[in-house]
Image 1: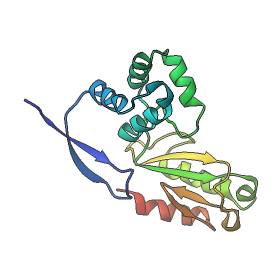
Image 2 (image 1 turned 180 degrees about the horizontal axis):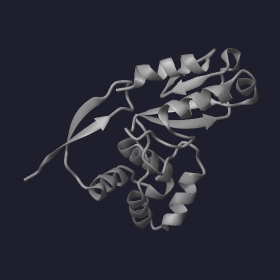
Image 3 (image 1 turned 120 degrees about the vertical axis):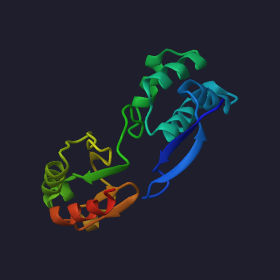
Image 4 (image 1 turned 90 degrees about the vertical axis):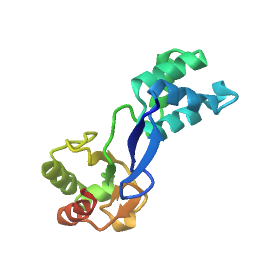
Amino acid sequence: MQGWNLRLAWRDSQKIKINFCTLRTMEERVLEIIKRYEDRNSKLLPILHAIQDEYGYLPKDAIKLVAKELGKTPGEVYDAASFYSFFYFEERGRHIVRVCNCIVCNIKGSEDIIRAIEEKYGIKEGETTEDGSFTLEIVEGLGHCESSPVMMVDEDIYGNLTPEKALEILRRYEE
């Protein structure tokens, strides 16, 4: 008998959507993803993107399975993925908070914004809150220097920030 599993998907919008999908093992799901690609050896990055889209990060077991199926070592797959900054190897929060700390944002107070977020949510760069709501990333440049300091939450950019404004914005994303 096939069971059902509730899977939370938060990548498509700010609100959590609940999707129903059949209960499958990671191995079954990853093999299904790999099979989508005929010329698998030239499709390593699209395969990794599809796995990350499914899980929100690249689980170690998925990397091992991709390596096995493509005739590579897990180290080769990891090396390819780790070259790119948008592949992740640990679970991340429902909302990704990126605070720009380039020279312009820094001069205009990004360090104070980062400190306020760290203190309010008890996380440092690269960490995720205990409830899984937020992951904090400090980045160099979001392309909005004219409204610095800036912060990006998921795909939304917020500028001309103060620590208070940044925390007010993040409160809207709390669940």
